[in-house]
Length: 283
Ligand SMILES: Cc1cc2nc3c(=O)[nH]c(=O)nc-3n(C[C@H](O)[C@H](O)[C@H](O)COP(=O)(O)OP(=O)(O)OC[C@H]3O[C@@H](n4cnc5c(N)ncnc54)[C@H](O)[C@@H]3O)c2cc1C
Image (cartoon, rainbow, N blue to C red; front, side, top):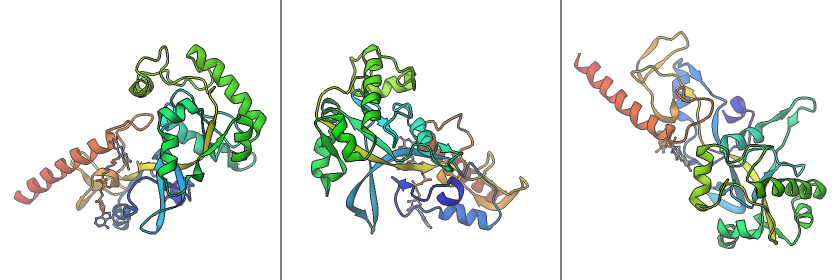
């Protein structure tokens, strides 16, 4: 379904492997309407060679969007607001129509020594099965060679970002401009003003790794009404079928996923469905 609906054959899910959309399939088999099937809560992930769960690749999350860190595309250029994860998802899927290819992917995580130390990334590399996923070099040019991205572009991208970061502004991607983004920065850099998500990459050695497109849950699914009853393509109720949680489409969200909405949806519509079933059975 990831391939069919999202044009993504390699979604590196951070969710349990046992969650494969069985509920979606069962609903579709009896004629349920679906919505938002191309939407997901995208997150960048890393993959450590050899790490598996139940015979399938295990993907880890990584911290990003903090001072001393940027994300660049395969050309060594910044391509997103690193302090707002839906924008990182957009960068993964940006499509270049003329050449019919993804415009940015793969993406790369780049940080200096101070950032990698503060986020514990160097220490994390040591405890993984194979530490080679994290590349390290004394200069950005050397690091770009190890990551196979153009050195000139990476050096230029970091220079430009550093100039902005020292002033606390990001005119290119508006990183850290909203309350939500600043809140994340302040969790780790409580005293960094005016922008707790921005800081230059200046302390060698420099670190980098490849990022994969991951997800903490898809947002598409079966369409339900206010009673949590699943509806069909014509808008009629499918008798006896209820839906909640990630099996249903998150139709309540705004222009982007709102953190917390998924767990809230699970609880609220589970409760509504149970009440409606009891009422229907006692009628
Ligand atoms: C790393 C991570 C971080 C997240 N952070 C947040 C957050 O901060 N805020 C937020 O709101 N949401 C967050 N989410 C999303 C949220 O956790 C999920 O949206 C929510 O748990 C989904 O609930 P669910 O009941 O649909 O699915 P689940 O909680 O995954 O439950 C589905 C259950 O169905 C079982 N199952 C699967 N197939 C079958 C079958 N055929 N028969 C019987 N049982 C089956 C599974 O084993 C599982 O127990 C996060 C998710 C991840 C992975």
